[in-house]
Length: 276
Image 1: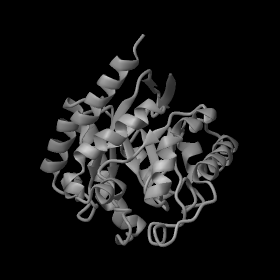
Image 2 (image 1 turned 90 degrees about the vertical axis):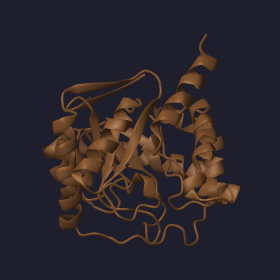
Image 3 (image 1 turned 180 degrees about the vertical axis):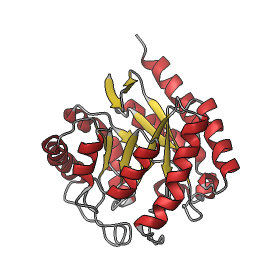
Image 4 (image 1 turned 90 degrees about the horizontal axis):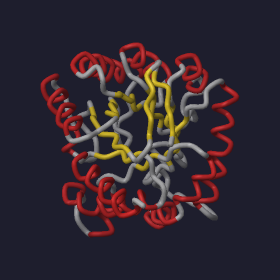
């Protein structure tokens, strides 16, 4: 069981939960996740919450390879009003802001976001960890080799699981030293990893239990799935469910997904199988 203090509200993770992806972007890799108008944002949020999402992860900038980098002001202009809109209409939901900019994180939390999801774990903005310490919100730290612009050019590891685990041992210590301890671990599937690296991390996911932090897995519709199957992101839902099931069996606490209903069903069935 993991307990996260979200601005005075406790989020208790007694069994795996779902984080629904709500992209306020025109260029995220999966077109089905994109929203732009207030109506589409609210409709998508409502659908995911009704289907069982505990957290909505809202991002204003795509981080797929080759995506356009936004300025802090441009990203904030996209995501901060959207966070306000969702929290006004669904005040009981937990909202995560997906950003590697500390200023966007601060503005989004002030607008109502409950936690911060940073693909760079503070590596792309030196002020991020101190900002999280001041905000005192849970922090999702993801491992990425390189940057979104370079991460898939030639990712190399001697042993990907060992190196990512070592990274998080040091990173969680950095977070504690900065002044906060509510940290979730995201191994960063697809971020500076080959398909083989991703599969090794998935097979060995249980190794991250040594960190004693909740593990978040983001595999939804990614190229590891559709390239292995010879399809597209649009046709990768079944493959996503298969890999999410393996992740649950190997200790995942949070599934970050585009398709909430199917992820909830996977959790329900895996929980039923292993219930004693």
